[in-house]
Length: 141
Ligand SMILES: [Zn+2]
Image (cartoon, rainbow, N blue to C red; front, side):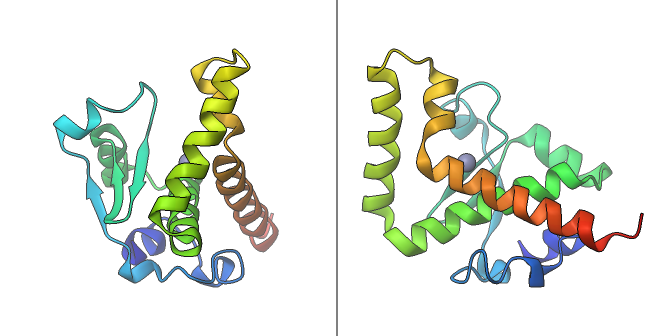
């Protein structure tokens, strides 16, 4: 993941305080195999597992041609899930994630709204927003 961050222009020093447990060079980045993608809800760009970050093949294609901030921030978002896994452990992470999601569904919220309200997703989005602000603050206008 370290090389991908470098190529996407994400300075690792911007991540250290946000995700102190993550060593980007030790996080493996994979293109998700077709069977795995079939399990994903439509619209998912990447999934983080204890074995690494899996990106959708369409997202992987964009890595080859694009160098946009959105891809870099997607990687920051996924790295925040790596941080959460390191902080909570796989079991507690899974339980908290599913509990939040099901709480949303129990309130009759739709799939995406329930997903959006999962606290671990809120935290991952906040990490990406913080890094985006740092990139914008560091870039001469
Ligand atoms: Zn997420």
